[in-house]
Image (cartoon, rainbow, N blue to C red):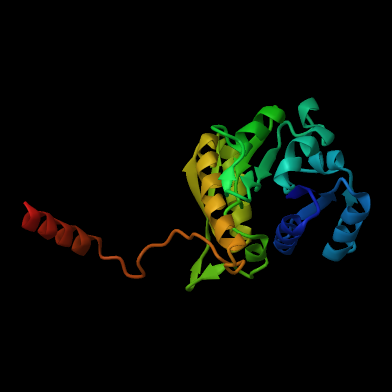
Length: 232
């Protein structure tokens, strides 16, 4: 698969490296041409680089990994309003979090929904936003022996299927949490993690969805029934 990387920061670097290792092609698009050139060279001698618009039109999917306050200007520079991302899956991993109060800056509408409005014809999927970029440098990201579960939200089933495959390529497990409006909940969850990180927690701090190693669902139901009977 060909994936355009819109951005040249830490998140862009680690996810691009993961997908290159899985056999995909990537292109780095950056506002700062020199920074894009340096990242492309770090990733490999054959990794192309160019402007944001070049990365937007590079392939089947694009990752938007930009500082949240710069997302809208970056989309405009990438030609999103003119249809440069139409027909492509656009992965939003950004979190619009104010780092004084650790609250969202977008009100009732998620950043992912705003992106969808600014990129007509694209299939926007919220994913990879729940943890620090350092987690994606783990090979693979595992916690207590369990793979990291990555929530994804979007309105287009094909787009979510594509992103689910990219999640698996990182060694993680995708979990579909529903339509794109659920992205506001994912961004709110990320705000809590970001608060922990600013408070001094290690960068591998995550929320993970887990089940018991040896689940005994019948036993749980029996114990619950007994507890209810005692309280009745």
